[in-house]
Image (cartoon, rainbow, N blue to C red; front, side, top):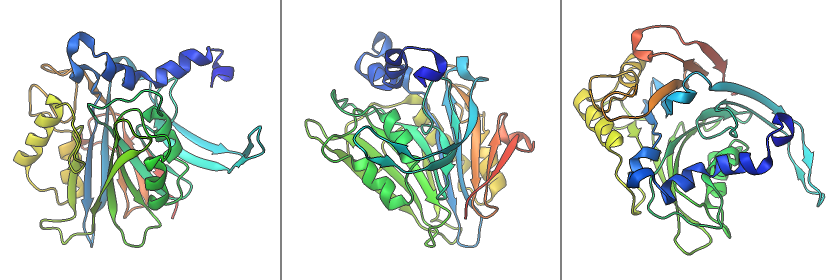
Length: 304
């Protein structure tokens, strides 16, 4: 990236460490100022629908600058002779940043989204989370992805949450994977929550925000996440794809809406919405509010 753009390597590297710097040195003591956000909704019914939907939230300055990368990467030989296998993925990206921290899928049919987490533990001399996000795009299975996130003998510098599903997983399970640094240890704490296919009544549904939900680790509260979670309770269970799209585009909360647009005290906004429709075998990308009934701006076919 440095060679192609003409920008100094150090500049790009520091950009990828921004989440960790933000948590170590929050602006005016406000940790929520770095909580870029994201809402992820799982709807996993036995007989359909099977939806993994994601609002990608970020700074207004990049609202119209994000793009989707379709990458086909040849094998690469490292100086020590080790060969990195070929890769192929489709992912929403931000200028100057590696792919992986938003939503995307790879040639193996592994689909993923990510949620920024405000773990109080931020470790030096460990891997910044944006590099783990990129590495995850090479995983062939959910199990391999979990193994990569454990990063034994090193560990992550800060926390993150990964939401994954594989088009080749015949169990039809979906997974919420929360990760946080193990303080003072060269490893991560990892919790895997399985969303099994449900009967459409009480199970098979799950939402994830920027709060730790099933991993017990100290973390900062994010007011936007609290509001989005409370709004989901008011809206009630989502049973159809139309329900999901309506919720992803919900703006009823004047302070911290689900579909964010710098209203009230919220400084961030929703840049795009990615919807994995596992029954149809596609990723739909909406650049506008998905609740307005408009067709997706672009559709990608998922590997099967």
